[in-house]
Amino acid sequence: MSNPLIMKLEHGAQLTDEDRAVLQHLTGTTRRVARHMDISPEGERPEDVHLVMQGFACRYKTLRDGRRQIMAFLAPGDFCDLHVAILGEMDHSIGTGWGCTIVDIPRSTIEDLTAHHPRITRALWWATLVDEGTLRAWLVNMGQCEADRQMAHLICELHVRLRVVGLAGNDSFEFPITQEDLADTLGITNVHVNRVLQDLRAQGLVEWKSKRVRIPDVERLRAFAEFDPKYLHLNRRSEDERPFWGTP
Image (tube, rainbow, N blue to C red):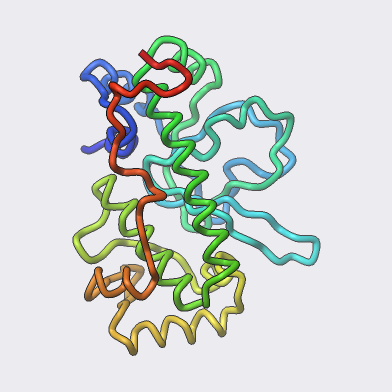
């Protein structure tokens, strides 16, 4: 079975067979997180690093009045919190409304990776920078784009991210999310989400049935969303150009 972590990190560094073996061993022991459960609740003192292997998780914040804002979707191959073990407590929650399979990685293991495996370290830096780029893209969309284009952009992004780890076809992918979840992601009401989805369907841009999203014309949807995947940084920089932290 393909390993989503390895498939993803191959875009961040030129991994060797030894590197792949290390990462395969790292992901050997998994556990299942049930639906509507937190992996790392707000206020918790984090110890382990968590990696999603199957399903989806999300970063979210709950306000005092019960409203929730989803700030990121975490797909297979994504670390939930690569550097979070240096913090005293979580300032947001990481959970799953849909169920997922994760790996719990001790902080000491991450420290060993970064001390003895330079190519993996480079790939982990890359993954962190991609997370930051993705957050910037989400902020721009929420601040400047109408809801239909926000929705289209999210679908385009997830399609690319899931293709990277072998979990999407040329025009479709599984995404077991509810309209309530989408409302909490885009910062709009459930009713507005329904109207946006109906409009995208009417334009022939998106089909969504039985938890599977299909994009009839990928390039047309990308044009509508003004989607440019450069913030996902999938074109690896030559490793002859050494980054500032001096990776060999």
